[in-house]
Image (tube, rainbow, N blue to C red; front, side):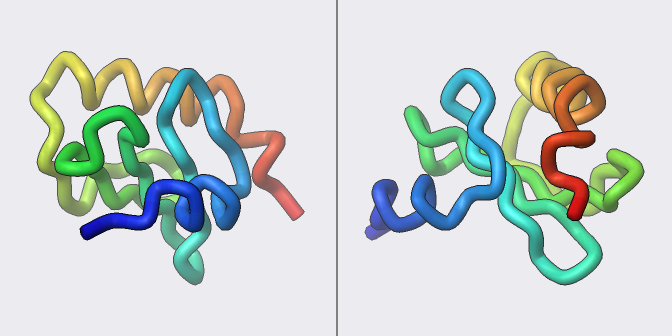
Length: 73
């Protein structure tokens, strides 16, 4: 079972219910409203793995591209 609060607290950025967390050089994305939907991205937004459908993934990629400057160190 997922501990949504811990994931949300550890996230570097939350946009519209999606938690974006750094994992080394890459980004983990989790839909906090439906934790079965997740994605693993490169820093440039290349998708390595996902359980999201195409529409949801495009929305998440748009959120990431618009807001990734807030994740920069």
